[in-house]
Image (cartoon, rainbow, N blue to C red; front, side, top):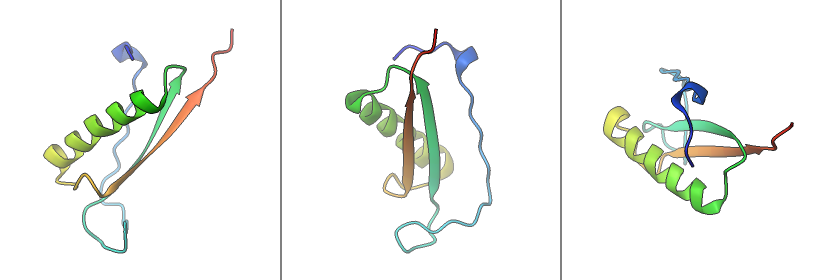
Length: 76
C-alpha cells in the first residue's frame, strides 16, 4: 500500500489511563482509516510494523495493543 505522506495523519495522546488484558502495563489503542487498499494481508503487515514501533519507541509490548481497521470506499 503506497500512501503519500501528505495523506497520513497520526495523533498520539499520552498519559491516558488504560487497562488491557486485565493489567495496567503500558498499552495502546489505534484506529487506521484507509480509502481502499486494506485487506487481511495488508492489515497483518501494518499491524506488525506498528507493533514494532510501539515496542521500540514507547516500550509498549506487542501483545498489549489493539488496532482497529476501517476501509472506506472511494467516492468519485
